[in-house]
Length: 319
Ligand code: BYC
Image 1 (cartoon, rainbow, N blue to C red):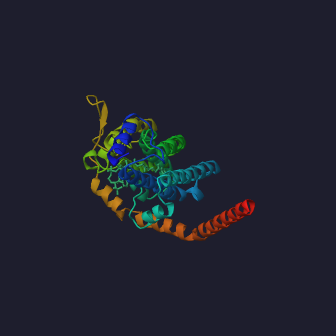
Image 2: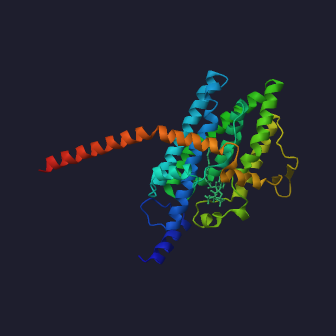
Image 3: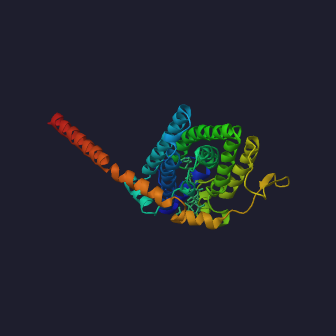
């Protein structure tokens, strides 16, 4: 088929809600966009282990420690499914990781904020995983098959993560005055960065238009952000906590909550590498990469040797 026909056939499949699979023809830009988004998503899962991992040794009870350990381990699993999904598009995992380490590839802005106390573990589960699910439920219907299928499993796990975070916030907000204040302080610090997770305003979102055409995205950054705000405000009410936004109010005409403008200078500053923890996060990932180099070398050498053995055995059998 000619390039033009291939493209028309590809778009017709997308329009008919037929998933695109790894061996199907796809435009280079579709492949590139997916590798960019899926790999950045994978990096976010892996870097996202750091702020919470920081509290595993200091969890307030064995029960909390077990739950947090399992959650952080789940995030590692999400990163691995997503790197595998990117590999189905021909990307090399080592190159993708390098792009994150040298700053060419992004990861979610949210993970550049510090976890100062135990309440932050509750706020991350409740707000950060809550925001992540809002975005990822949409991605279960994304047009690329392996990404959509990875999202189904990831969303099930994220939903448990969100509940464990909310349960921590519930325990703290029903605890001593000091614990309630800790919960309020962590909501104050995580609220705005959580809203920023959804990305720039629709008017500023460079990739959205094409991503809609290809059904990679099905809801805009602002739509998802609004959906998250509408779902989360009543949850804050149940906790007896105050969302740090004086302009927040129900707008009966729109059927949504109105909220204050987001500080986009802060967002872009963090995205450009100047957030409170960007350098620390990249240094931690670089160290993990360096420390694990011998394991990767040994695994590759073993795989090569095994393959040579199999080739040798096949040649002997054929002779
Ligand atoms: N942070 O045109 P736009 C988790 C970038 S982790 C940094 O709207 P797009 C968890 C964007 O990449 C879940 N950068 O882009 C883990 C683009 O720059 P590039 C993380 C951001 O792709 C551990 C530029 O801004 N979720 O759940 O159409 C513990 C223009 O943006 C951000 C995902 O990764 C940001 N927040 O839409 C707990 C979801 N936002 O690439 C929890 C998958 C935007 O041209 N990703 N940028 O250099 C997506 O759905 C989309 O990529 C986004 C952005 C909605 C994030």
